[in-house]
Image 1: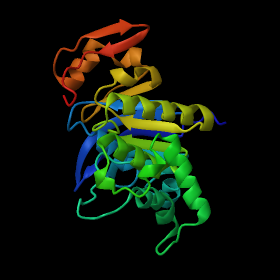
Image 2: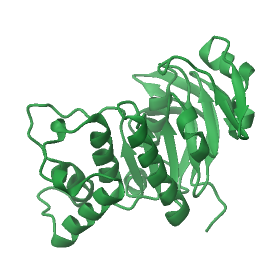
Image 3: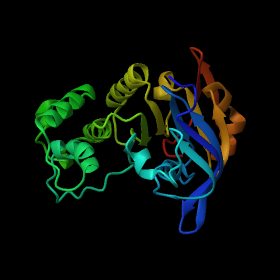
Length: 263
């Protein structure tokens, strides 16, 4: 396995409608690394992920994903990246079922009018099992699922194409602690067994600190990047959140006492 980063970002400025939202962003994600993006609301965390997928404009700097730039090779990059957005805009009036949501992760890559094969269906059922979603939910309407079940279904959709990189935008925003730990345990398996690089936006990192290799701390601009012990300092957190935040060490892990989940 190459030592080259699978995601390499240098001095990135990106945003929408001619206006940068983030500037000066520089960091790497290696094979089999789980990297968390932290910062207050409006810090540009989602914009950072969206720029990697060609959904936000790159004004300056560079992004390389598996050695390719999204400005020149977007279709190639999307073959290897699984993405779970912060919110899935599925109308409650549309009776789309779990099986259709997850199968779309395969069929949309093949083009219009694609029909799932028996192999596709078996693969989806296996993925649902691996993310901890019971098979009896196969025909359940997506909007009837709990928040945790919906996130697991969306994660399954991102995984059916066997991506080399996962981009997860606040995957725990509507998830209970039990589901959160189940999902992180599964992501750790992907990291360990498949070498998948995982970049996820989080608000409360303490519950998943045992799984995190590095942290990117941003607030419109780069504040810090590296090991949690280097990034989670009172100085860096005050610069990001604008308030004093206590940091304690417990079992060799840094914990940031950020009271507001959406600070």
